[in-house]
Image 1 (tube, chains in turn blue, green):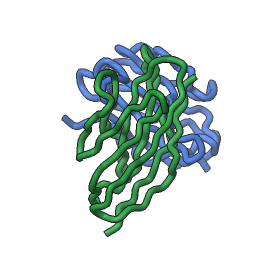
Image 2 (cartoon, rainbow over the protein chains, first blue to last red):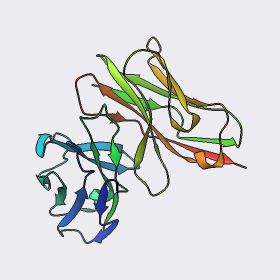
Image 3 (cartoon, one colour):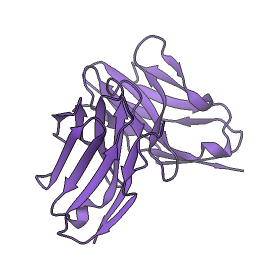
Length: 114
Length: 113
């Protein structure tokens, strides 16, 4: 089992550019979560999916953020346009049957917006 | 709304010493409680969880935690730490019926030789 795979590991972009973060969950997991980690705010849930359907996106900070899960093996988090305050580590996590089951986290994407 | 407070941002200890990482939560409903560990440049992984039953929960790597409902605490303990336990530890609360875990800010445990 390869675990949750995120790409890229690091992303440096200029303010105003579009950024796309990618995630491949563990096969067979039916929940997928996107988290953002910053020093100031800690770990925040942005959005989660169940069976590829977005269930709760109340944590998405602004309309600049969007997430999709076109199939069970792939999800994207897009920021357009990006701003310096979006700089953070973004984690994808998957689980079998929800947050009461262990969340399996990817290694994260460190985003720097200059 | 639920919240989690991890009382210590950093805890330095010597190898083979005992350690306790403190976590308090607030919630108006029944909760589930978790401890996750994050090693450098990695994602989080589950150490242990409390869903119901015995208030003393044992996890991986010799860690355990005790749920105290009256004090709304879920402190993490290990009787003897190793250098390899150096990591950041996160306490999380999940209100019953919700998939939305709320994480604390984390405690950085540094084990020195």
